[in-house]
Amino acid sequence: MNQEDPVRTNHPIYIILDVSESMWPAWSTGKRRAARGPTAEAFMSLIPNTLMALSESLTMSNAASVSVLAFSDKPQVLQPMRSLAEPPIIADPSKGVQTNYQAILEFLVLRFHHDARAITEDQRKKGFTVTIAHPLVFLITDGAPFVGATYQQPQQWMPARNRLVTAPLNARIATIGLPGACEPVLWRLATGGDDGDRNAFIAEPNADPDGLAASITANIARAAQRSVTNDIHLLDVPPGCAESGDPVLTQRHLARDRTSMACRMTGTPRMVPHDHAASHPGRRRARSGRRHTALSVAHR
Image (cartoon, rainbow, N blue to C red; front, side, top):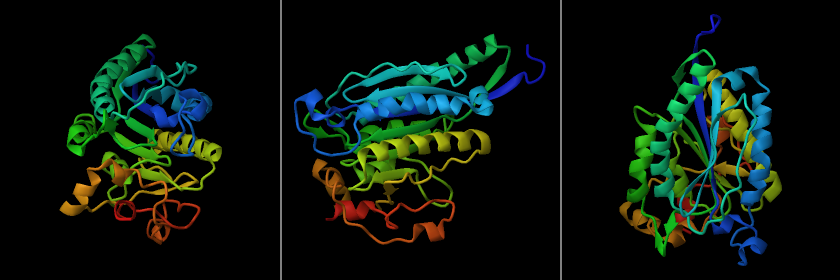
């Protein structure tokens, strides 16, 4: 047993990437892409370097483990839960077609218990007793929940999301929507702070794809480090993104939220002026100085 620090807290971190059809360039799918955001390949090239950079911090390498998952028709484990002290080994994802939120969220509920045991055993071999912290989840997507020819209703995937974010797991979830993503879904899925903000973000329509991918991965790294070292669970607004707002949907609005069309309108949303940075100085405003709201998407 290590006598200097026999008890450690380890923070499980999940990076989840949408690999459905729209996340791949046209040449790899034979079809035209609906949106012009970063591709899955762009993120796959950045994530290993991001993890390597995080591992340079002794605090992070001792206190965090990372798993990389992908989802489309079904969940994929690209990197099983692995200490940041070890080099990342991330498999290439299989190209998918659909965007099955229910499958990835239900998988994550079950996977966490498997990963907690793996972390505990890994640390035991190193001479430490470990306490597992609340998991941190970063989900990147460009689409609405869609399976078969049907929009996946919130009541299909929200129960798994709610199991993730309540005791005993109490996961913190940040959602990053690329062009084509559904703002009400991003907001519903994310968690946030006591002030009502949620870690839900949507790409600005004209953001440079390569710059957007880099800013998102860099902000995920900063958020993970702050969560582990300072217990701060809010993600800064990535450059090229704006915050997604509370849908505050009426019954009529909910009816529209159930259609895939309502969620595919985010590529050209109306912009609503909102001096959010002034009222929440800890959160950086998007570069345009304005933020998208879910209502501006749902009611164009």
